[in-house]
Picture 1 (cartoon, rainbow, N blue to C red):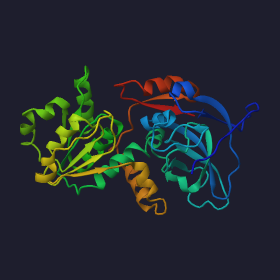
Picture 2: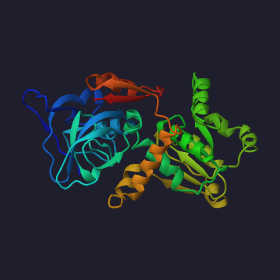
Picture 3: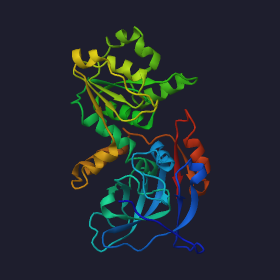
Picture 4: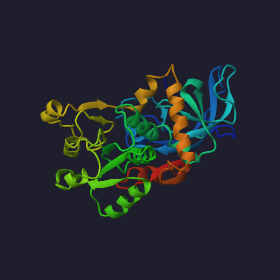
Length: 349
């Protein structure tokens, strides 16, 4: 499942690759090393890819730490997401050709490198007329947001949803996709010193209502629901008390989908919500969703096509980001783990 890596013990040649390798689990700044890698020639079903850009996501950091649900064999190259250009293909490869842009379908492929060899089945083609950063950050958060809005409730223009962690990468994509569909979003964020600027930024993306966690428990919610219907869908990435309060505002028969647990606290569900409001509770993990469709790529390719079209039409903007040369990965890792810094850290190869 995991692509093996071979570390070079000889001087770097012009055809060799570099990558961020960890040989044991731990904090990224302690275990990641920029090393020379050997990239073999493609086998019949392999694709050699020159990586253009790769982001640093929380799941990438968790994988290096050894706390993620999927862990590659060690030593491993970090990174689960990115975009690259096809440099060479095996004799039996049919879905891509040299010059195509591709992104990973599966997790754990190791994208924090200048070049890599991947099986054809682990890649999907993306259009090359969208921004590099947009393509590099397409396969995790936008795909998660797309599925959350598509798979659990039949949402129509005028319907509403509620979500926490609304300023997260997924939350911002949810806002934009929902706005393009005419769906009202109620967006919950944590209070902070720069709250007004955050609220404005989310409104600029298309958010209809932005509230703090405290407001969930206040009478203002009654006034809000005079302006829009109660939500049919709640998206939870936090857990803890605020999630319980968010659930109370779901419409009868609505669904809450949990796709993260930033607070590291359990989700507590009032019995009354299950009995008298008939709410449904689900979990979602985009990696498993893609793996379940490994032999039928039609849904995956349609999703990528739809998201790319939103980017082209300006309905889905690339996330605010800071670009770093690969050799400056330590600075990028520090910023990626800095609280309240709402910028995606991108490694440029």
